Length: 235
Image (cartoon, rainbow, N blue to C red; front, side, top):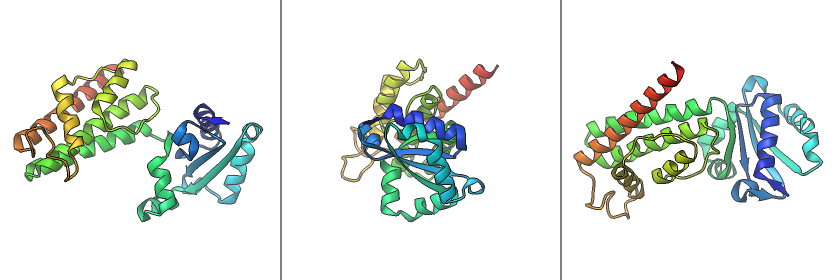
């Protein structure tokens, strides 16, 4: 049997020997933490990818693991990866949706970049009086910022959208997050109400300008606190 820990060990070996851009675990081990074999998507910079030769060299380098279990690497250059990502090809979409990222170059910075983009999107939508969407993107900014801070501490990315869940994990990693109980309930309510069939984002119904303003201000405050903390740690 193969475990998630085995997958992490294999990913570490691949990163050490091949310097990939991305290693994603998919299949049974990604879903259940255990399985009969190991399915990996490994993405390389175009300049470092040589088709079957790259895959053959990768398999040879993992010889010590093949004695224990079967490894099925699915290798791609970044250009092909992006094409498949944009095309919505079913098999590839399943990997992206259900897989677990074991390694990504500049992983933390990418989450922070996306958090910043979500925040700027929320501000733009607020200015245009799109209050529901402004609330949603403010929540996304907060969620991605928290995930960036946890990944930086060594957390294995978990597919959750619950701010309360992320705060509970943050406590385990001694990550201080300046959000009040009221803020958490409010922001989590925003995400739960993202679909039309929900009875509004908030208990009182459809969000108004004050709600959207509050959501954006919470995201701005958390971002400012994270930046201050980061600068302090570098001082």
